[in-house]
Length: 54
Image (cartoon, rainbow, N blue to C red; front, side, top):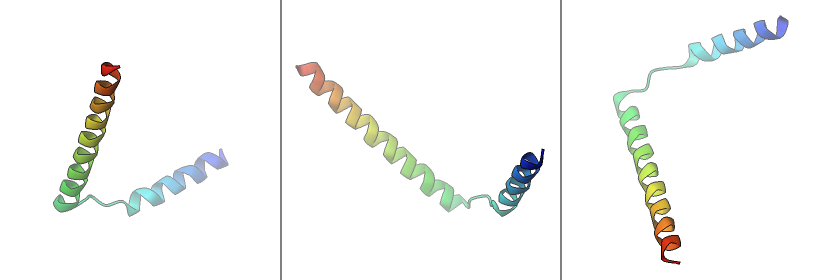
C-alpha cells in the first residue's frame, strides 16, 4: 500500500504543475501534428505505389 500512496503523491505533484496550453501553443502543436501526419501518409502512399508497380 505504501507504493500506491507514493505513486499517488507523485501524480498529485505532477498534476499541480500542469498548465493549460495557450491558444498559440495549441495551434502550433496542431499544425506540427498535422504536417507530420501528412508527411507519413504521403510516404506510405509512395511506398504503396512503388510496391504496386513491381
